[in-house]
Image (cartoon, rainbow, N blue to C red; front, side, top):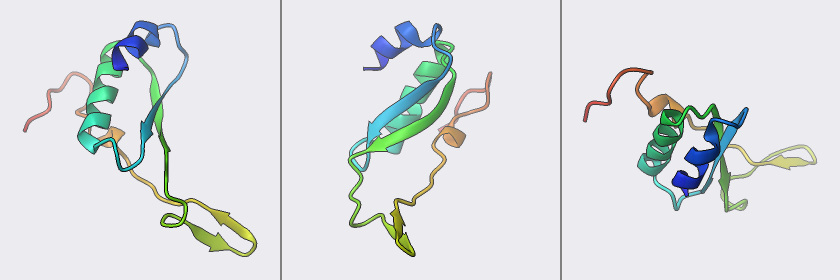
Length: 85
């Protein structure tokens, strides 16, 4: 839960938000990140678990990797600004 993370956030060098892919909404990721940043967390990224590797896969020779990029943190307002709906 975010409340547990915010209690520890200030004493961590880096925070990674872990979320379930296609279950957690973008709005929830943005809100959780905003709450963590409000607690002085240094949020450096989001880890998505539960990705369907049959859907999100590309191949390069004998190597197959997951590939999908998104920037949820860019959806947050700049520090000191308020988000307008």
